[in-house]
Image 1: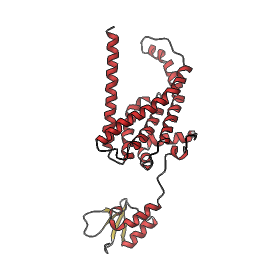
Image 2: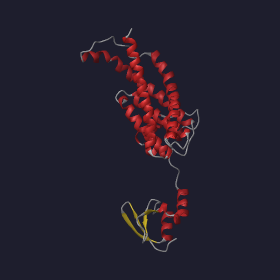
Image 3: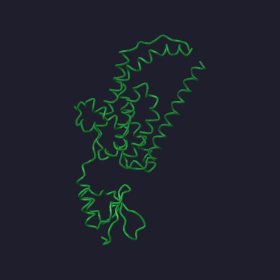
Image 4: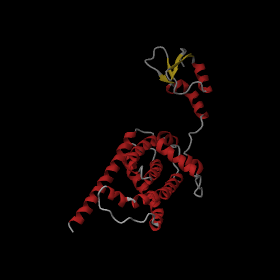
Length: 281
């Protein structure tokens, strides 16, 4: 402990000079935060209080008094498999994942449970079918009319709502989302480890991608936002992985980018093969 006073500043505002006991008291009362900048005579620059070893005991006491980070609304309500989430919970979690990824996935890093993200993925995909199937059915039924407006050949209009397809979608879409998330997690986490990341473990990667993919199911369900899924989903996935694993985002960027590139190339190869097979018949 140095006898010289500490010059303190926070958010560009000077807090004056305080000695060691006064700084400890400020931390204990909340007047000073661990991120408050400090400077002593002879030092080259400002240093945050959390970086000074003489305040380690005071900072640990402050940390023990701080409330735990808020959980996702989904995880705060869904505590067991029989839980039935409310629409407000579904909507609040969706907004948190889509628009506040840093706060959402940074706050959730302390948990690696698998139950809640799996439930989120299944419920989100079911809700996406319930919302999106009627909207897409109407849009597809209008396709012949739209083609005629632009001078293209019109075809017979399909039924606005096909109950058989709807039931199939309810059964297949959640299963596809679940299996796809597991497969993608293995590949993305392997790439993260290859680039020196993903040290928080496979479960953390799965939790993150499950919440991201569940949110993207909703985005894909709306015709007006479906075209944003490739870009939005890519940005959201690598940002969320960086916050969840508490590591640089470039590792998630490379891992998700490589997966996306492989998927695009596979789709192009399959499309070219299908087209060539029809051409040579």
